[in-house]
Length: 359
Ligand code: ASP
Image (tube, rainbow, N blue to C red; front, side, top):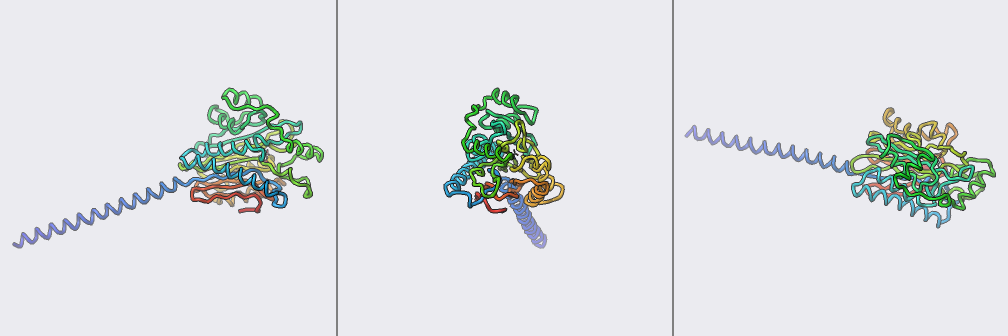
């Protein structure tokens, strides 16, 4: 009898042990799966941020019609990139397609709306960078490629080089079947007038920069374009495309096609696209400097942008930069009156701004 009781007690104890064990396993499983869920949901954050140039962009100088046109085009560009990311496309594809929208619009100094150089020609620059591999591609001084950012992408994907220029870049783009246009395509009346004004004053002019504050403002409506995106796989890419600066010297190359100056992307820090007086962005290696400040000084993206634009301002340069980090934090900073800019994120945030000094 006694031994039977002992056996029963033993069985009960075993049962309790078994149930507890199961419970622990379940808890462990739940913890693991909730961890998985968290990391999956982090992976799924995605975002795109763009700019359409910085300069003397003031509310007083814009008509409601002009505002509407800019707002709509910037939103269209954001939507195109966002749709790519939402479908699980790469950040590279997103920034390229987004930049294409702005290149095809005469509102911006890139592609169709490119400015004229001092001999009345259009020489366009563009670059793109993959933050996962640090692969990059760029073209400089091209005059007949409709979408220079597409040429930059092909340089990245199909050569061992980073930067092709002038005729060589055009021949290469032709071999790859890119769309070509003749000189007339880039000839817009307003752009040409900008050149004549710049030459009258003997100035090299940023798109949105007034010669003096009384001068309105057809001069200020265009700008270099750029996009930076983070995709669902946590990969960052950045792209920039420009016509450069009005009345620039024939053959002059700005910061936009220079990796590390006008464009940079690195998954461990951030992606950046710049706009402004290119020489200062080259001298400070602005986009790479922002990444370095995050990596080696532990600055946030916003702090690093402020620091870099501060350095540029100290040298006498002006402009701005936009970007995002690998947690989809967005930042921008500029020392001009305004910058056409906006972002759209998977958490539902979607903004387009022109004027306010900073965010
Ligand atoms: N950064 C460009 C350049 O210097 C100009 C611009 O941003 O509008 O070529």
